[in-house]
Image (cartoon, rainbow, N blue to C red):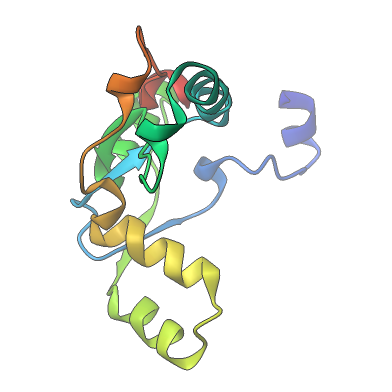
Amino acid sequence: MNACAACGVKLFFPSEFALVGLSTGEEKNAWTTVEDVARFVPYILQNVPVEQLKNQKLRIEGDRKSFNEFVSIWERKHRVKLDVKYRPISELHKRISQDPSDHEAAIGREMFSGRAAEGPISSSLFLGWNPKSLEKAI
């Protein structure tokens, strides 16, 4: 990777780019690795009676941290200082009102509003559930 960076290749690490947070960055978000989701779903389908799952929302959560906590963990773990800028979440509301199919804005609004981390999580359905923490994942 050092040779790539020396040649000017962008490595797509946040340290090479400014990060943009919406709102204050203090709202909690649910962080879950793809691997944890891939373990959770088959386990539930194989071990939980269908009657118990019918018409239920399953919330899978590995860790609950804010955007600012993510930035702090990244900086500490990778020994870098990130350039973080904040913009109002109203920008996402405006994008969605202009284009209801703007999924990027809709997902961002849920994440940065804190709504993605609301409600009960379904981890009790998975005996011994031990998802990766955000710190381990990044």
